Length: 422
Image 1 (cartoon, rainbow, N blue to C red):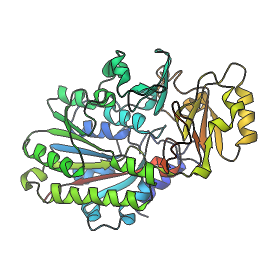
Image 2 (image 1 turned 180 degrees about the horizontal axis):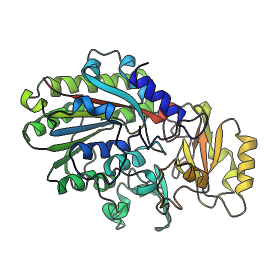
Image 3 (image 1 turned 90 degrees about the vertical axis):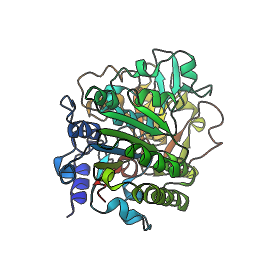
Image 4 (image 1 turned 60 degrees about the vertical axis):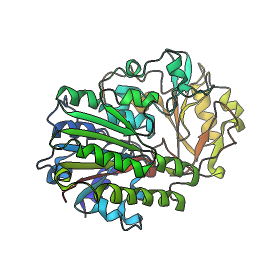
């Protein structure tokens, strides 16, 4: 049995919910990556759990640069080397260690990337999904666009005076490295977004348009820092966009990923100066994977008015991890209703039970998520989803891929570790 197979078996064995894959924060999770990076640079890790040494120990000699490449929605099953028929996939898989690790819960970009950039669990950082209730501001927010969910204006929360750094209230990995005298960069398509401002305090942020200029920018940056200890965080999100529209297993999604691999090889690996390459440790992972969706398996909130009338605010979270804020005295009624109408489609979990099971982390201070995960959580079985639109018609746009839940497709992502010696 290979190392990857052993790790996958251990992850599934440690799951805290039968039939689902829950985060393995203690050992195999994207949560463990920042602590691992800080440990390699001999920066403070403050008792954070790192990835097991057996994954990285063969790749650490004479490292003074680390690249963390996060490919949004690169699920372990769909985008691991055996599934990608591309001559360039060997560039990723050769001379590397690759194992599955888990995303966070919810398995969604806002939550997962906050974990990756701060080295904290969702329970600590408090960013709980795509759509989040902010009781202290009296509104429901779209945390990707940083805007009120009901009235779209990109960056609207910034205009209302919400400061991303103060809102998060945590130190980023970039700030920790800065204290150690290590240069830190973030390369993203969303340089000025509220989310980027929250995640990349302490980093010099570089913008790109597509994978072609991304790898040119990355190569030039590294070649300008020869001999210097440097951390570069790279975030590529176009695979996620394609997978939402066409589906994660679609021909279109695979074509997008192959194009990404071509740019990686032709504009980065083939042209990178050898004296720079030998300094670099490359880590590749994803924030989450995606689950295939269909209109037939989409449950529209508008078709269940009795359920909606038992809530005091609309549902939040994601379509595959939905937080319900239930009116006083109605919790058992909501459970009974879902059990009667949607029993084979959703598991209903008490939010307090999810917290106690450690789905958001195992910290003693639960204050940051109190009020942000509702009273009940709807977790879909198989490929079901729960659709509620805070603006517009919920039936206008049906995605063919989504995430947020605890299925294997959403939760398992690859972790690849390799040197770039030429």
